[in-house]
Length: 218
Image (cartoon, rainbow, N blue to C red; front, side):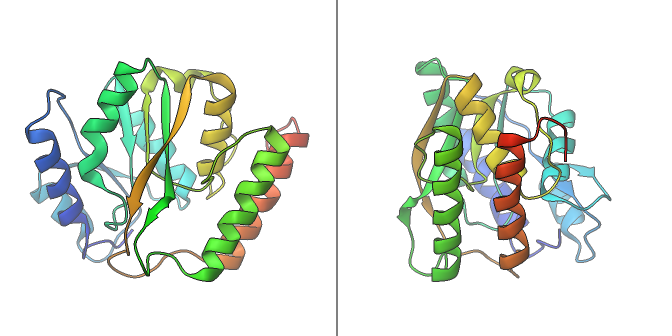
């Protein structure tokens, strides 16, 4: 939503990365009523734009998953924070190691200024809580860069349409698939920050407890 400052650079980076790769690729941009020309920029770069008027991080990803037809799905934000150039190598790793799902660790090589102290602490609390409740050993429960086989979505029970989908994807993957966490470089974002620290953080925290102890969808 409203990522005109960065969407072109992200798509260009993806195209350059896959130019010398054996993998064919298609770029899907899920757009939520952008008013700054984001969809037009994406289409001008050859991306397929999928309109999703309903708000929600998780809702956008679910809509993208439904529209994707490749054997492997890769995700990342449209703000230049994630290393798009790493995706071909991550696809290779998924295949060579016989994995189903790869998630990424932003804290392994985070550039200065990429995340403030408040967000670092919030991420630590959420990751520690998730690891405790579900018996996992991840370093980053909130990373939005994943590479996975499309077929594994049939195994997942995804309840959430908001920000909690990110941690829910990892919980499902680590418990039901051959999954691995891989370090990446995480950079400062381009454009306006969309997150609401307290609202999103508290929603994610409560969602972990609901996921663990409530069987019915929230």
